[in-house]
Amino acid sequence: MTPAARLAAGLFLTALAALALWALPTAAQEQESQKLVIPLADPEEGLRLFVGKGCVVCHAVNGVGGKAAPALDADPDAPYLDVLDFTARMWRGAPTMIVLQEMEMGYQIELTGDELAHIAAFASSPSVQSRFSDNDIPEVIRDWMVDEVYQELDPDYMAR
Image (cartoon, rainbow, N blue to C red):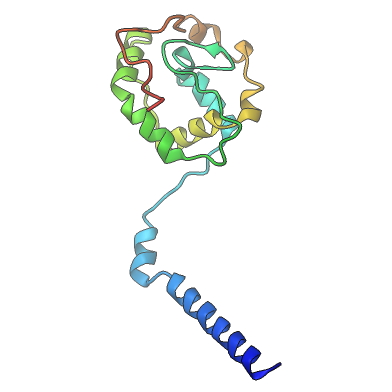
């Protein structure tokens, strides 16, 4: 190896080591990051919750479900699932969703962070959604399904 090549290799390794040290979190960062929890999202569990919690009363997937709110069909071209973005869109629609839940079901749906992650995973999974059909909806929930868009409410809240 020539002296120039050795110098270049040495500079490269020094830069690589500096980058590795820079990327290592400090003790304070490690302690702070321990407070962050990102749930593991399961689209199959999300399907069960989508139906069981009553989301299907107002939202449709594959044309199956209510029409009072935006459809939650997965975008097959989306490169990844952003659970926080999905939750933020839900948050923007919360007032409308609460009104519809109380009107149609008589109560407000309660969801944990894990449940939101599972529902987001279902909403972003074309393969799991492709198996979703009317047969997945119990009769009691089917009776609550809304077959019209509530024009006086904001129908585009999930699109923002």
